[in-house]
Image (cartoon, rainbow, N blue to C red; front, side, top):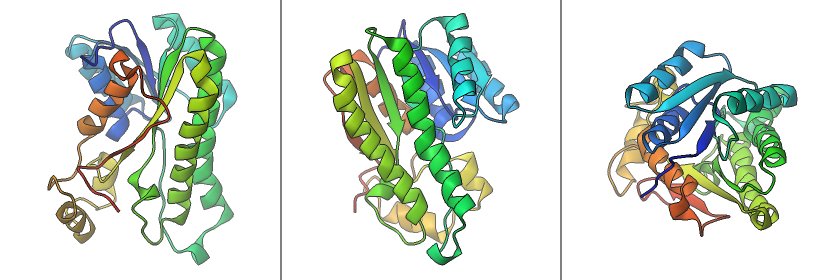
Length: 250
């Protein structure tokens, strides 16, 4: 079940957090993993080492997902080592919260460039290479599109765009045997959460209290669902937006 043997999976933003969890989980399922990072070669190498220690195959590659030439070079590098990439996980993303009156154009563009433009450029490059081969695209969204909170207007808007990208491209790419689905995590424990002091904060405690399964998510929780969607077990699923949140709902 959820076997990815014979598949090559590219995970963007996979040097830590949810992306690293997805890369490790897909590696355990047998996929050859391409760990994309922007400026984290040491952390990316650790993910590669973890996958190899578990018996898998992996490489890491630098690329800015907002730059078409770097995306093309990333796919070239992946194909040189492993062959055609047929699983793409658009995980690279950023978040900044704040009051609408304090937002700058730079802050708005920063989040939209990485969270929206990035996935579109990566998918476009992947589709040009896939031809009639078929494949699976897994976008990483957020429950912030449904669990609405103040001061998240830009972030929630970018992730709402990811939901729309998933639904539209599932129709556009379905005839080419390319499935497009989205995993929308709830609160998840990551290095970034610790860095920003969120773990153990009143916000996280309240989130856990509102979550039916009574805990915060772990990167592997997201990885398991993404692995399922990438596998042939999910061959009849496309255009789905799955809340992976321990039961937390609006």
